[in-house]
Image 1 (spheres, helix red, strand yellow):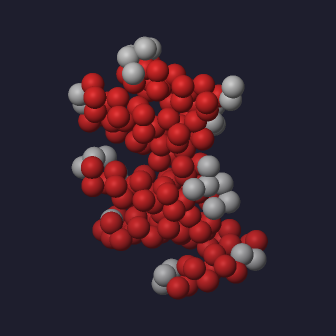
Image 2 (cartoon, helix red, strand yellow):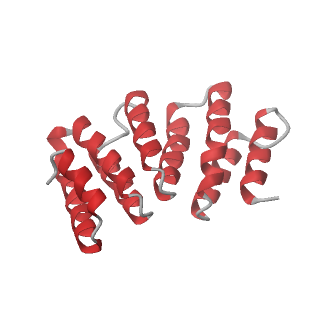
Image 3 (spheres, one colour):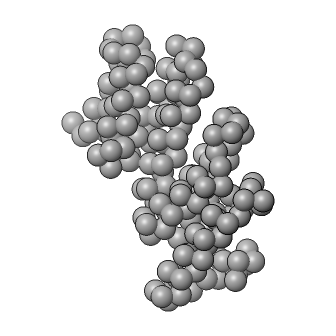
Amino acid sequence: MTRAAALLLTVLLTACGAGGSLDDDIAGLQASLDAKDFAAVVSGADAVLDRCKADGADASRSWRVESMRIKALARSGQGTETAEKLEAAADAYEGKVSAKLYAQMGNYCMEADDNSGAIAVLDVGMKRFPDNAAALNAQIDALKAKAAASGDSETLKQLEQLGYL
């Protein structure tokens, strides 16, 4: 059984009342994230969030799960999904999502060689936080440099179309 399947089975059994606590589920997601098993985090997050709701958990626990999912998406090179989840989280968890978080997730997308996804994350961050653009501009500049150095004309074209060149 793969680690992702084992985590999902544990989460589902726990959600049905056959396992440990919500904190155990959250710790399991964190362990998967620490082990860079991003697929396990992404696939297990919905069940843990459902358990948070069912258990009446405070928003900080739900935010912890959601933030792990967002990080796993970004680090696995799923930038478009990262941008979507960041936007939803910014609406759902007031005060938890910042320009700095968008910049960090954009950087993770770049590290995962998802330049198009990094652009998506950074662009929605710029639109949401126009007054806090410094951190986002630094990541856009890093992306420009990476694309120029590697001859990535598609990334440069996307940046130009969005007005960043």
